[in-house]
Image (cartoon, rainbow, N blue to C red; front, side):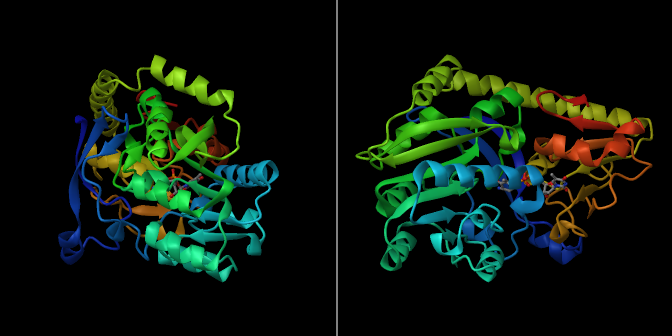
Length: 395
Ligand code: DWN
């Protein structure tokens, strides 16, 4: 049974940065109701109304994974680790974005899948064969006609974006060599509950994974989890190591440990999620009241990072230009546009936080260390960051 526990109100497509605020553009803006469910039969947390992926992953996809040095480093480390541990002859990445992981492989040793054709173009140009398609059974069959079974399939921040997990895992099973491994990582629901990071829910994050949920789901596709890791990336992620049910990989102690930890944390109980929903409501109230207080003091508040996550916050809390003047971001193709739904202008972050600004909301709170390093001048002159994780506060 699927039980609703969180209502994040009317939300836009997070990738739909607006070119202008003309009547024509505003009329076309699409909204849907963001409601989050808990499935009591398999423990999966899912949004109630996944959108049509063709509307989301277009040739105008804005996010570039290589914009953060933290992520570049993390992808380099995992690419090396996987090559050393599994010695794959053939590899595939699902959801390769702008090639930040691929770059750590030889061009003839890996292929990629990336449905956003503007991104697939980038990696194809770099010499990494990239299919500009969605991962499904049809594509798996097409790929297998040209390539042998894969020793390694890797995917970061992609599997949680796919509505049909059964077809996804079945297609993985079809594509793996006998002892091949499927390694994937996505935001972790355990961290979302701990950090109160409700902004991890948006149209693209169709599911947020726990070990216990994925353990149930991969079994249905004759796969098994043989190792698992919790990661600090994106405010807390989970990395699964999966092989065929018949694969010869020994099951690590981490598997049992994490399963027990999640049961202790009651990730299998609806009450846990209901309590979280209450904390989300409280966080909304506190953030709005802090921003109103700063407005009364005539302070200019801006936001750092035109993240997809912050679209959830701004729309759920109804934060418009009256409370946050604009957003700064290093991604060229976001600059000069407006954030989805609340229409905050996006400016370049190249020159750092302007001198007249003393308060900056952390839209990219997951990169706080990296941002603090860049914004030493702001910190030295007494500037304060505002965050909502794990509680609304000044940093
Ligand atoms: O899964 C997803 C994640 C990985 O990326 C996607 N569905 C979409 C996207 O979500 P997001 O926008 O919430 O992700 P990030 O990686 O938190 O976005 C960071 C944003 O902040 C980027 O637009 C780049 C920007 N940034 C910046 O302007 N200065 C980032 C850093 C580190 C900086 O120093």
